Every structure is written in structure tokens, then in C-alpha cells.
Image (cartoon, rainbow, N blue to C red):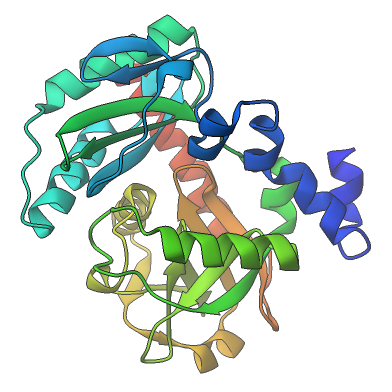
Length: 304
């Protein structure tokens, strides 16, 4: 069914994206509170205690969070997520009192108690009115081989993150982007800042390829994604060239290819952004897809 809808996405866009909209699909049978906060499975963690999801109480204050992918029971690139977690708090002039080793232990406990070795975990620390640590599985959608081979459709959205380097909850931007994605049948909304530059996706980072050279926005203008960081490391190690610069809308017309990076999509080619089409199946991007998968495999092997 999915392959049929994807091959006929221009005819049935609404059907396709209702199919892949995992948030609505997976949590449709949950009660109102669990549905709103997207908890999956039976248990979540609160300050080290394992509790049933029906007892979840949402955070209401300033919240720093991370979403980490779990594969074969291993939280991927845990060290990098923890580094960004604490850095986000530092940017907001806050300090998280929970140690990294404690967080890792709690995530392992969450995985064990739920009996789930694949998925996405959201962990967070809320500072007000009372400091509290939460960790729980959330809905995810992992693009399959078909989407990697054919590329995805994205739209342009005039918006930017407030304090983009800090991973904090920004409900307004998320709601606007989700509405656009849902109504236009898109995979992602690509943000345009006040300078008219393409920066990142609403929940992903963004790269372009032109004449064999990769381009991406400066770190100070985007949320520094973990997958983005790993892709930049792969590009450096393999000797390919990358230019880090502001990218204007006008430059989209001259780019050969484009792709998203993120926790769930990993490295995902783009077929079209707004009215700008891109080639899919370019060897440089295909190699990055393979190299990133290989990097995940090595990390799992070294961290079981």
C-alpha cells in the first residue's frame, strides 16, 4: 500500500501523507493526555523512577530536551546528545543537575522495562516550577528505501528558531510547520530567515550539492544537529569539499542536489523544495547515505 501511494504521490498526496504521518497514526488510540504528549509503550522515567504512562504529568516551565534514536537497544551517539543537552542549558543560563552517566542509565532502564530495542526516546529537563527529568519513547517515522531512492518533497516557510543553537521547546514554530506539512502533503518545511536565507528544516538540517561541492548553513544559524555533525565529519574524512555559508533562495535554482539530515531521516535526498527541483540518485549523496549507515553500525558494535 505504501509503495503504491508513494509512486502515485502526485495523484494521492493527501492519502500518502496521512499514511506516513506517524504522529496521528500511532497515537490515535491513546487517551487525551498521552495523545497530546506522544508517549509510547507502557513505561516512562521521571527522576529515575519507572512509571506507567497513564501517570505522566507534563512539564509546564522552561524545558531543555533531546530526541535520540535507539537501534538494536543502543542509544545512538549518546555522548554527542549529552553535550548538546548541557550546552543548550548553558546558552539559556541554566544548569542541568543530572549527570550524563545517570541519564544513560535511565535510558537503558527505559529500554529494558519497555522491551523495545528500536525507536526514538525524548529526554528532557524542566526547570520550573520544579526541576524534573523525563524520558519516554515517542512516535517516529523512519523513511524506507523507496523514499531514499525517489527523494521527498519539502516546502518553504518564512520562519526561524528563537535562539537556534539551543534545543528548547518552541511550540509556535512547531505548530505552524506541522500545519504546513499536513495541508500541503510535504515531508518537511524548510525555514527562511529574515535575511532571505535558507537555513534548516523545522526538525532537520539541510545540505545542498553543486558541482561536487556540498553547502550548508553556518552552525550559528541552525540547531546543530547530531546527524549534521556526523555528516560533516564524513565529508572531511573522505576528502570531499564543503562550503559553510548563508544560502539564498536564488541559489536553489543552481544546486544539483539537496538532502535532509536528522535523527529519524538520517541522510534523506530531496526531490523538490517549493518550485525548485533537484536530481536524486547523485553518487556523492548516495555515498553519504551508505557511509552514515556504516558509522551507525560501528557505533552499535562498540557500545553494546
